Amino acid sequence: RCGNMQEVERVCRESTVYDPATVKDFLKEAKLPDPRPLIYVCDLHGYVNELTEYLYKNSLMKYIEVYVVKVNPMQCPAVIGSLIDLDCSEDFIKTLLQNVRAACPIEPLCAEVEKRNRLRILLPWLEARVAEGNQDPFLHNGIAKIYIDTNRDPETFLKTNQFYDSAVVGKYCEDRDPHLAYTAYKRSWGSCDSQLVEVTNRNGLFRLQARYLVERQSPELWEMVLTVENQHRRNVIDQVVSTALPESTNAEEVSATVKAFISADLPNELIELLEKIVLHK
Image 1 (spheres, rainbow, N blue to C red):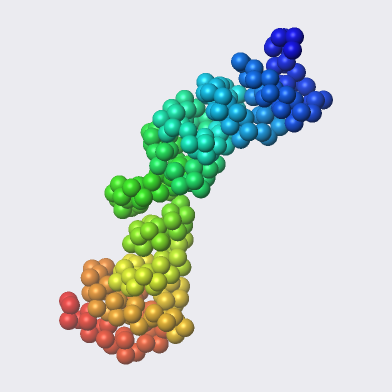
Image 2 (image 1 turned 135 degrees about the vertical axis):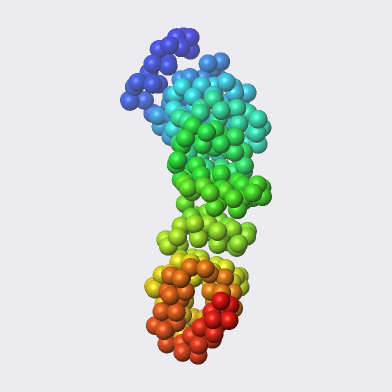
């Protein structure tokens, strides 16, 4: 009330003896032209969403930028989430992110925006981080999801990008495009074998599964697929015999497949397989 704003700001920033909720409410009611005391109180005591709403509804947009750029960039994800909830313009959000640059943490930012189904807002910011050489998997997961949802040549990205998490992106693809889920799981080459088998079984993609089995040459994976408990075993065997193995030009792949059929005690299927190999050659 005395107009000593510097002292108010210092107390809000440095003191630990005031009641934060009472001070916060007082400062909001005071409608100070410079809301930095309120910013410090809200930042220190976890009122970030309330702060964002206050600044936005009172058209104090430059102070939103002051907060996330100069005071606490780590809270940028929460601020962006609140701005989306307030129907803030995408242009302002994109500009804000552009000014925060790499100081904003990637994982919580992607999480806040994705749960609001607005992930593509982040694309310019994410691509700028990639251009800086950032290899964070959460960054590349976010780009993968946007490319998938916008059909921006996602298959090439999934085959060539080294940094996304195959399990996360594969799961994201399963209900959108099972072929892309297969591509993501295949790229992990072993760590997502069970997910690959499951998604190809569920969607009848037995030819893709058969090709992967032949290429992988994994005795453990063959054993899992050729077990009698697998209700899809016949479908897979048919595709291995008719397509996947005849297509192979790798002697080691042929040998591994024959061994797998022997181990699974499939004499009739093995004869059929060998005949197909001989006829094809």
